[in-house]
Image (cartoon, rainbow, N blue to C red; front, side):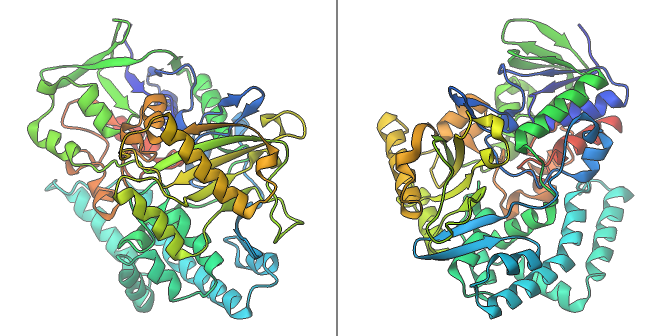
Length: 513
């Protein structure tokens, strides 16, 4: 059968691209290797009666413009009225409850020093001045830097004008902090260890960076600039709305349809060959898989130009994240805030404890005291667990894909022991509440979700792998040197996380062909 476009992968970016193209009148088919759509945003049962909202946790990066253009509100997607905030517990203190809204932050932390509250207000005011510019850069297709035409020059000129509009002092500060480490950036402003942990930790999630790594301010700013309102129901709700919109637009979705090869002749795409031997024809193929899987697994070596092969080979995709899903008798509670049952929790004694957790992966070791990003989705989504029971979804930082000695059952169990020890240090009653657990290592991510080296962002968010360099110079605008082959996954600009932006931008690039 012939289609206008074949999309490989039914994750959130693949579904976004497919829906946008189908709404423009293209005949589109999405091919998914698994029996479950959604990729890292799929709800999965990990113990009878207990489900997750998805491997990834945050949905505040989903672009409002995409929600509108795909009509996702009309397909059941709802946005939270207020952010849940993230709680950073202290073993012997009240911890800090973080909100982007400075007024809510102040009221939620009555015991925090007044000078810290004042500094936080000033911090948010500064971010409010610079993040609109960064957001503009994130939401525009990278300029064609190798093109001699006017498009790239015009894009760069508009970016320069936007920079000038920041004003001299704000621009100077942005240029100063851009290459900095987030530890220095926060130490200049705050004294509270818990506050600094809560702000720094998300900037190193899914990276090969610690808070003392140069450039970690850039990853902090990227996250801040992308943040909007989160989705009620989390990642799984995004997937449900996308599936409904795709279906209404006429997208054909085939599950258990693994792609063996992207078929190419004379430098142009002909379609794909499936694992079962079936051929599907299309002049355009858009891959939502990571760049290395797309070029090195789906293409015959002879179809890949040498220069592009080298560009893709050097992409850094060192997975450092693991996951533990826990079925619980009751939600997590913390002695320092007995009145509160937080939905999002970040652990860490101080900035240096985050750095120490990161240090381990440089030597192929899992962190002895890992940093945990925890979500308890059952506080707002009761149907994820039996009545009065709960789920804790834990992303573990850091656990390397290339673990010294390899990932075996003993290593997997040791990872679980270390995670439970950290949790018990903050929640003394935690272990008595555990019903069951599932542990996923970066190797499991690769096998289950098709992530090369288990990298949750399809490639690191480092300064040398952002914007016009993501995933490479020759593929930064979603099209590739192979006629008809496009990239639409998180390995492309503006990067990983649940944003739907790479899929939407790739769809625009395809429409303009």
